[in-house]
Length: 302
Ligand SMILES: Cc1cc2nc3c(=O)[nH]c(=O)nc-3n(C[C@H](O)[C@H](O)[C@H](O)COP(=O)(O)OP(=O)(O)OC[C@H]3O[C@@H](n4cnc5c(N)ncnc54)[C@H](O)[C@@H]3O)c2cc1C
Image (tube, rainbow, N blue to C red; front, top):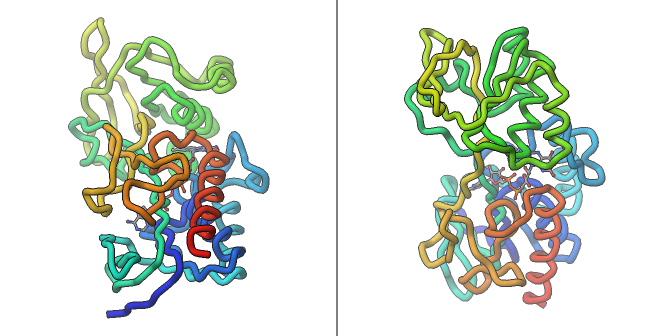
């Protein structure tokens, strides 16, 4: 087993992790990033970022690719292994992955979050056969068809709008009586006659044969089945934090809590971006977190 050591290990190559690692490397610290999937995190498949941070105008994939290249140029080691455990060791940390064990003096957790599932019958069964979480990737498969987006926040409205580029009709199904999205996203979908909104409505089941064919939805008027070839749920995020030890404090929803300096309840273990309780929802918020924590870590290691 490998026991390579770094000054700092950053967990996650989303925009927050890439930003933290870049800042650390530029400050002269030996730095490694670990990634369980593909670099870029939640925005890897978002073609039109809104808001787009400076440099992000060409979309999430291009933005993340540029940052990854800049990190390689700055000497960051990018390790494509999922972190499965972290433990205190020799005044620092031992970070375990599927591929080995690594040491670091400090660790920044930038493991982000994933989209919540609806948890209704048929959702898991039809995954990849009409159930999707990526409008930009899977939208083109639904040319002129009817699909549904579930949710009432920024992501749901943004992605419903994206789907109208391909689909004939988009049901926007929201359990509340009003959207929680920013007004500019509401204005856009209200001006789009391909989108039909159902407030006060939940999805009870995803139905079909080989592929999704219908949804059973429920409102105060009762249950009904609506024809639908695809369903995209944007009903909020859950943190990617299961690999962290139990003594790292979390909020009621499982997001990691930190002090004002972004250090967790474990000294030397920091949390930034979407995994952190209270981080604003945008890329710029995640990047600001990352830069601030990286500078604090560098000051600690001086
Ligand atoms: C549909 C959608 C659209 C959005 N659009 C915009 C937009 O247009 N503009 C904007 O400003 N914001 C947007 N956001 C918000 C934005 O995605 C987040 O602010 C940002 O992605 C947070 O970055 P992050 O690096 O903290 O987390 P993430 O993007 O979640 O990245 C975390 C990374 O850590 C990795 N990871 C997790 N666990 C492990 C592990 N155990 N080991 C190794 N790696 C691990 C993950 O695979 C992932 O790559 C959008 C969000 C969603 C859901």
